[in-house]
Image 1: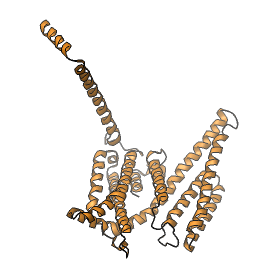
Image 2 (image 1 turned 45 degrees about the vertical axis):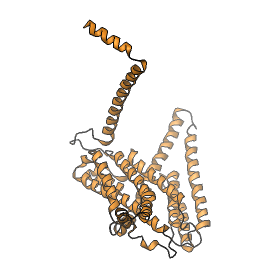
Image 3 (image 1 turned 90 degrees about the horizontal axis):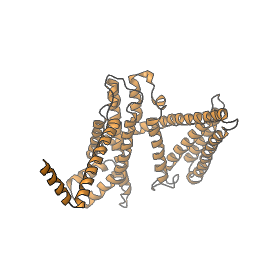
Image 4 (image 1 turned 30 degrees about the vertical axis):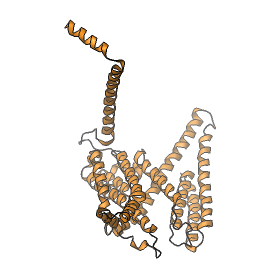
Length: 378
């Protein structure tokens, strides 16, 4: 044994320093990889798995963050379909005579044939095919969450179970829609469903905005009262001043925005009617709301701002060139505002501790998760 030990020692001494350092780095890399894989497995178990027995009833926030993540994934895929996949399919199908590309381009162009102009311009047709990509992503999310609502009613604990499988199935579903022709599935069936859903989406958005702004208002007022008690009288004025400043900014944005809409979109009577009605209703609702016992200027300003945004999206989508100077141009501002408002609503619904009071109530039992999943589908 002593001879073997001495032999091993002599061999280790003969190894160059680079080999020894390489062995050390390999050991460190292996240890780091093991720690990384262990942490990643724990993270996946926490985010996508379940840590409770199926006999334990689900809480009101169970699976909510995972549902929001799936919604964000569908939003990202819809942008990929609209601005890359749809136009790319049309482009390469015209350049290469490949049968699968021809089939997919024809599937995505169904219902868009009328958008080719007399001079041969097909830009509107390409944009239409990109829009059908949004229909595919939105339709997949709609089907997924409606099925999730039915499943949650039959087995409420399923809402927090098998989320890895749910993500995989959703990706397969949204990928399979690439090969489905537009007509009649997406045009006109899903298009009409989405039109009705857009109305519900605006209603839910207003409820979420009211919930969010009411909580912010209550929190800042409470901090002002606490500062007056714990620090000194008048110390809480900074919170009230910040709240009033934020309200003033929102009202200024509304009035300036409406003035710009009068200037740029006031070329026809229908637009002037929409703009005037929004202005009168915004001011009227603010006055009525402030006359109540539990008034909140911040919630009124926020709803007025959201109504002004809806007004802008309405007049900027007017197909009459006389009424809409932006006709035929990419509405970058509308896209950015739409993404921002959607993300705020989705994240508030998923992560707020009070959002469940807006979209569901724990007293309704199994119907609570049906309502929440229906909200996500909208």
